[in-house]
Image (tube, rainbow, N blue to C red; front, side, top):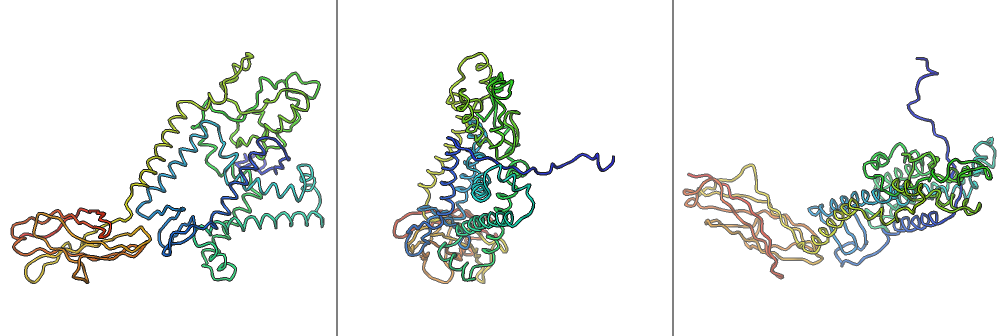
Length: 469
């Protein structure tokens, strides 16, 4: 096969210049953009007083101390199940919204969509609306074109740097890190992370845009399993709009004005049916409704609807109300699972202990033979104090046998764990020769750790290893 007839494995990108549009869905998208970006940029700067020994940043991922702070909640490494539960809830929530309303996440709240909308706002502000941007693209290189391009890219770069900078503030005290960044004292990883996120935001939001949604994101392929004929999604009522034609000649309501195509950030024609590129941003609804108002025809030629509505509408009957498509068994199951996990996490959060204990026996050697013929076992005890005050704990063991416990480096059985820290302590258990003469090579042992002030207790089961004589 010659090169000129070889099949193309990747279609070259056609620049997409969405036209400005106004309407209820566009206003909703602007509102969500302001809210989500406001939360993202402002959250690291919110202060939260946890006491003198803890950070005062409301939301902090403290990698250095393996801790996650969220306002009054503090998550330790051994409590990662909270994070896992939140991730599962996020996945189920995505399933729920997709099953009920299609790709509503993609159209309104996905970071790629939010930052692309922001970049497009800057682009329109500097270069003009759709026709002006198309004309500028086709124009020869000139001082004006260079000025507009550089101005746009500079604005994009500022947004991209702010995006990368905001992200690193979640991992360190924001005011301190800000000072270190500007004085050159920050860690190299901070500058590297900002540079990486700046580059990806600049390229994805400014140049790739719809390519990310179409080719890089896996969700368009997954959504097919989440939706069915009852799911609401943005669609063109072809039974009402066809056959289309120009104004005054159209038999259907569609006058082929191309308004829905011109405003689409994905560059598709919704009238061609459901397409993998469609993110259901609903801007085509605003554009079409505005045109229907101008020509005196009813709104809703493009609207949120389900495939099951078509037979009723063709017969002139009213379709099911929107709530009937949302309140379905499938969606109730998704919601039940989502809510069940959420309730479980809340209950676990309130019933968890404010200190944790782990004990690990030595494996090599399992025991040490003493000079008097007895045996000693060694254990690594770790106590995590999850409060803002120092706490004193008493260590003891419970067993049916004559075993003796001792802490390394002290004759006491009490240890103090500093506020919001973990303490590692070496613990020994001894057995006399007379005990070993009548025992097998392992004995169950229960360690008890008790808060001396509050009386709260926890236990950890282990074994005492030895050998018969």
